[in-house]
Length: 197
Length: 399
Image 1 (spheres, rainbow over the protein chains, first blue to last red):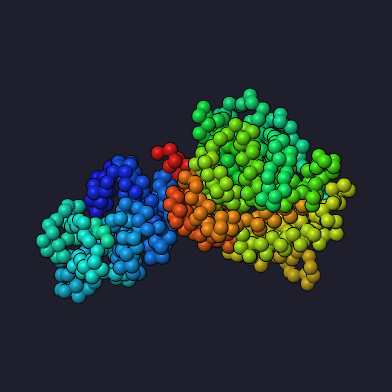
Image 2: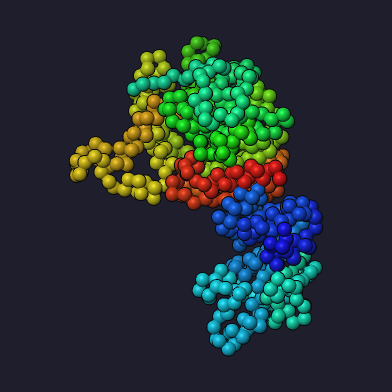
């Protein structure tokens, strides 16, 4: 089951405790939620902005609410979930810092995954080509991308330090394989952080 | 104008007209179950107003069969001018059941899998107790002496019907528009009797605009000289003109501006030029007049007053100390809310208010806004995504 999941989701799925209660913010069509429900008896809830994704997720029996991470997280009570998950959504929010604050209020721990904009391919593209990178991971052009806050591994670590959050785990991905923590800011295509307040 | 009296229905009614729907389902020997049933509940209902109503007649239909552990029961709640004929032909209009797209063989609510109940709300005029039914104390129609009802009272009557049918718990309660109000009220009144709740194109309270439109309709009825304080049953001179105007005004709220433009635009009706008079020059006028006139054949004007009033009094938060979230804390039900992007009668913002309250109360909730050009009426019309959502939600409860 988890083979079919996107690598960052598979990593999260492996880490989540059985029977946990989680909120998947930006859950898409609910692939992660369905895998966790079916394999780990997780009580999963989702928030997703796109209506057809929500219809697909509800159609597979998941509890998903159509809404916006920037505006709708305030309605969830404090510490109402074991985990809040924000996968590949951070860079699309209007205020990523506030969204993570909300995740850490709602969940006891929060998974945050994002594409690392400081990966060497992107750097070369910008340095030598002088153009905004369009890569396998970031396939959209600058004018039609949903990514409005480009973030790097080091940027995110700096934010974590500044806000005094605690890192309980961090994983870095190159393709679908885990890669070394050393020079992650240069070599990781994807980062997954597990945070707590 | 022909006025159709409330149908006197017996427990052994006419043969099933929805034979196709029921073909795969064994006909129950129990006279409480089947098409065109009516129950007389002798225990009086305690109403929100403090009044008591009894005995209470409830007209209803059931489809499919209850399984041995009675875990497959679904209650369908109808809208303002709807009735119990959710999936069988209407006895007056001959039209197929009003929610045949959702309820029937191969549909998300399927008599092959579910035991389906749909009852006429009290206050209505299709066989349940209402202003047009006879007050046993006087032998005359109740008319405006009928007690004013609330949505909660309609739900209490449904609960009494379930008791009569031997149903303790509902696997699901489903409704659109006013039916959604009943569905949403169910877990607040009977938290232990509802496992899941589907609320479509509805709201947790009637807004000032909602009340305003209803008041226009009521005033149209009461301004009709035939209304006579509601005592019009004896001579058959019913306030059909007022009721037709009420229906016309309400019908506009069920459609979208874009839908009206697409369907009628400014096209003229059966003529090439304007008449410079007050005939129905425009197609949209002709359409509305037809909607108004055909409505009075099947609906009682006093029922229209009572049911719109019940909707106006509807405000779940107000019944729970002003907190909508508090209304659901005792319930363990799963909720599914659906709104439509062109519905301006009960717009998406109203569904979001419910969803936020459910999130705050920790309830298991799903919500989606579907896209449709048809406005509020979309919940009754072709919408494959609605069927997919309802089907997935109902099956999700069994995982």
